[in-house]
Image (cartoon, rainbow, N blue to C red):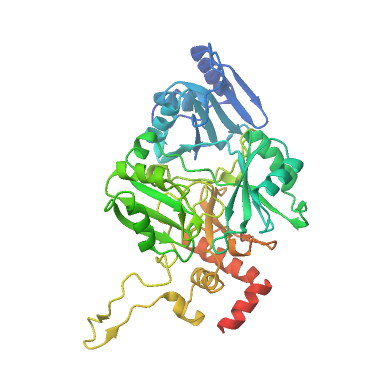
Amino acid sequence: MHEENKAAPNGCGKIRSGTQKEAALLALMEKTGYSMIQENGQRKFGGPPPGWEGPPPPRGCEVFVGKIPRDMYEDELVPVFERAGKIYEFRLMMEFSGENRGYAFVMYTTKEEAQLAIKILNNYEIRPGKFIGVCVSLDNCRLFIGAIPKEKKKEEILNEMKKVTEGVVDVIVYPNATDKTKNRGFAFVEYESHRAAAMARRRLIPGTFQLWGHTIQVDWADPEKEVDEETMQRVKVLYVRNLMISTTEDTIKAEFNKFKPGVVERVKKLRDYAFVHFFHRDDAIAAMSVMNGKCIDGANIEVTLAKPVNKEGAWKQHFNGQISPSSENLLGFPNKEGGHQKSLGKPASLPVRLNGQHSPGPPEVERCTYPFFPGIKLTPISMYSLKSSHFSSAAMHLDYFCNKNNWAPPEYYLYSTTSQDGKILLVYKVLIPGIADGSQSYFMPDKLCTTVESAKELAAQFTLLHLGKHKRFQLVLKNLR
């Protein structure tokens, strides 16, 4: 009979029998006083812990843990996560075989403890050569509703959603980039709880549900990026949305300088939104208060603090789509490239376009001489002034055609799963915001790839193939030839 495995910080214990596993779990419960119950494919440790009084901890206290070795259990995991603070509840997802599913949810008693867990345990070597991932877990209360008639107003959409679903709190509708009297063909619906949003999604998701005679598209809205308060206290960049396409960076800079001349360092505008950088944070805060709701070139703008990228929190995983029964939100937080169509949260930083440019014009207008062949002059141009035959990659083709059709750039959402042999497999879902008018705007290939580059290229090829069946897209292709 094997010796009982004792948990060690980075130890790799001996293989244990079922009896030894049970003994280790019983010893953990006896030591901590926590209860443990298994139901609906998950095993709950605590929730609440012994002696807890009052309601559960607020949103932001739970973290998602991925890449857990399949033969590792609470007796090894709990001591590791207790290093960050007091655990309110530990939920380990379980297989029928008795192995864990490779991921878990840990709810702490405070947000500070959850943030500390992310800081000290993300990419932690829990066993030799085995690194876990830890990121914030949010109960999503918002749904993305696409293919909404563009002439519908917020009040109409709100009333309609209240008729067909329960628990609706609010509807967020953004005006069209070129015609402010219309919406963009989509809306965000906020519900009173994650459960209410999940129930609404279940009712609307089959694809046969119609509003105003249109078959709508339904998905979870991307979780808004969580940035710690200490980081936000240093932000001196404002995010400005709902601008007119024709509004220039110079106009924006002049308008934001009106309340106090010379405070704006620079402005970066992308389509109908912009980032306004200030020399000092105090001026940014004052400008946000003064400029929010102001009219620029006929458009009422919205101004908020921009959210910085949290590089440490960039670890993301989807894990076979196996979602906890009590937490249906997509755990594969989307990796977005360009635009913010499905995300209600503010862009964290300047989005990346496929060609590295944010506008049709090149970043530098000066000619230069090719150093290897004296006398040959080089002229800067935009990739969009070229013909489609100049591109060999499907991703570049897709970006090019979207621009030619005056659509927003394609948005790429990266997901991953783990194969049976432990390899990470990747797939992109592509959103084409410009055709969110009743036709399909989401595209995901039926094949997984081993590299990010191949996954993106395959997704672009798949999207181009299906867009070829779209009449508007065929017309664009015809005009480009």
